[in-house]
Each structure stands twice: as C-alpha cells, then as structure tokens.
Amino acid sequence: MKKILIICVFLILATSIITGCNNNTTAYSGSAIIQEGKSYKAKTLNEFKTHMEKNGFTIEDMFSRYNVRLANGVLMAKKGELEITFFDLLDSDIARSSFYYTRMNFRQASGFSNSIKHYNSINYERHSLESGGRYMLVARINNTLLYVNCESKLKNEAIDIFQELGY
Image 1 (cartoon, helix red, strand yellow):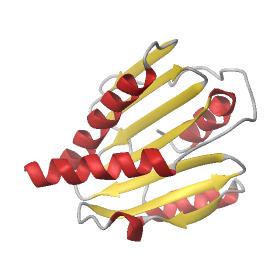
Image 2 (cartoon, rainbow, N blue to C red):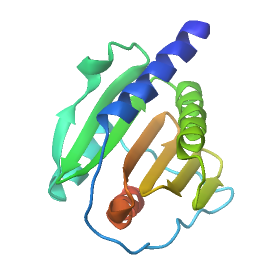
Image 3 (cartoon, rainbow, N blue to C red):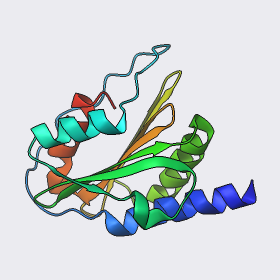
C-alpha cells in the first residue's frame, strides 16, 4: 500500500511539473452543474484523444515517462500554451487517492486562495482552485483523472473543455 501511495505521489508530482500553461482568455464561464446521485460516464483514452484532436489539440503519450504500473495510459493534450492531462488508472481507488493528493497539493501550493470549488457525486469529484494568477482543476470519474494547472487567463478554455468531456 505504501508503494502504491508513493507511486501515486510521483505520478501527480511529475504531471504538476510537466503540465504548465500561460496566457490567453479572461472571463470565468461558470461552474459545473453537478447532479447529486448521478453516475457520470468516464471517457476512454481514445475518446479523450479524438475529442481533443477535433478541437485542435496535439496529443502526446506520456505513459512511458511515468514508469508506473498503476495506469493504463496517460495522454497530454496541448494547444498553444494550454496543456490538459488525462490519466486512465487501473482502478477507482488509485484515482481517488491521486485526486485527494492533487487536491491537497493545490491547497498547499496556493497559499492564499481567491476561489476554491469542490463538487462530488456517486462516482465523480471535481476540485478547482484559483490563486496567484494560476488556475488548477482536477476531476475524477471512476478510474480516470483529468488535470490542468494553468494561468488564470486560460481558465475559460480549460473549464469549457472539462465540461465538453463531461468532467
């Protein structure tokens, strides 16, 4: 169990270092509409890849960078300075642990936060935080995670993509 936690920590830290974003748009497009008791459908690696490519993103397979046996695959979508990472993990317990670890990292890294939002349902969790010109968002459905850590000016675009994907 300790080894799994260490690997999860490494996975999230590596993503935090690799995923960086910069400027583009400004206004906030609204919050997610989360229905209590609703079960959400996770995307597959292929569905994520197809959706992102249709929206002008290039896809990079990050799986080999992580030397981890806890994931089925890791894809990073890049468009301009916006990078969104999708993790297909082996099971929902690993995804849940990674989600909570990332949430904790967001809070520790932010210091003073302008805005924190957290939603959850049966198989869904979403946490966002805006602080110091950065916008961080992580969402989990079952065994998948969708993650972004970018400049606040890219927040609208990131939120729109998460919502289009159902995260």
